[in-house]
Length: 340
Image (cartoon, rainbow, N blue to C red; front, side, top):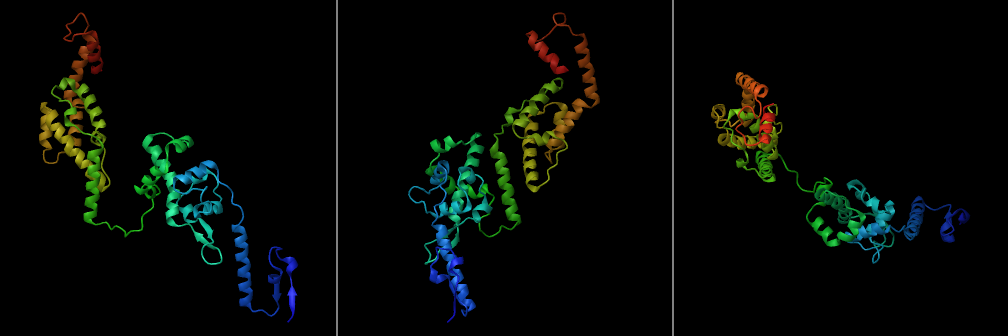
């Protein structure tokens, strides 16, 4: 048999007998021998000393359940090393796509190492670090510093965060479940949940709205009414041009209309107010009631007459000369400014 030796061109770490080729070997034998060489090289690479992560990174990973001191060859550390993640800041830039691509050489399967994708459970725990930080900062309205991580955050807190299912929603990941079809029943349930959320988020008390029973005090009542309405998340009613777009928005707007109409029934006791409330008893259109009431006191003949009376008062009244029913000079100045 004729043998051609090419050991001088091979890696010196390979046995000399494996660096020989026969001129008559089959293609299948050549492929097998090449595959064996690649596997040996992979083993050599896997035995190389990995880069040691920084101390803060090791602390973060320990919080999610993996201790480098006791198990440095854990798949999480191998995958992080293979991906070049060696600093704590790298963990805060991980996302769903990056973790899904993480892999490591598994030497526990058979006699040859196998490139293996990091399993889903490990991926979720890695993502939990950034998700926890974002949730903490949104809830506490302050930065979660390295000192906070070390002093205040432990593995029990992280386990509870993960068990509460807060990791996947933070990344917008959809669990592997059957798709939800949009049916009338589903739409009704979603709208009901939205309305319940509207009713629970802010405490609404109709008694916080003052009664409007004197047309001369329109400016003061309007100021107080709008401030209270905004505090109770009723801004949409104050805007005459607002029109809800989506079904959920329409459901919420309808709930606001019903609530504020009930407020108007109790608080609008002037003749004009009572008339507007009666006109909308069937559609409880509080938005239209408030627009019409504002127009009456701001843009009508009545508003012009009232404006003339106010102007006469502002230009002719003299404090300490004309009779002032109020008790103090401060009350006079306040009333004067309200008429402007």
